[in-house]
Image (tube, rainbow, N blue to C red):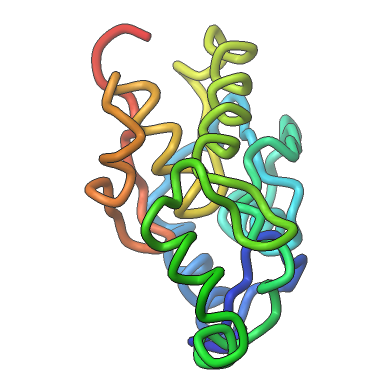
Length: 169
């Protein structure tokens, strides 16, 4: 994956750097989790295979995908700025309720990950979720009872373990 490109739900493999990061993360885990919930996108699935090579209880779920960026997926951000400045400005000023052309809004992302958490909450105490920055931040907001407007205040490093749950659901 090249930097400066809008990926969203584009189904691309991990970059060489991403594969190296996943292999390095493998040593941080002493056991394989009981359940691994995984985005069904290739880069998330590859991460699971590299970090947990012996995992058998992997549940792919499309609700864990990254924010769908629609027509912008696969384009450089520079090209989007140049070719679609009005739509980009509109989305940038109200990403919670505005979607990129052919994509989804932040609220739609929040709704689908909330549905995932509600459906799987009992299994999450002993599970790992392998997903994407956008979906993981939305999960963090939901589980910490934070407003969606705080989505970007939740940050964590790529391929670093993060606890997204605080208190009761």
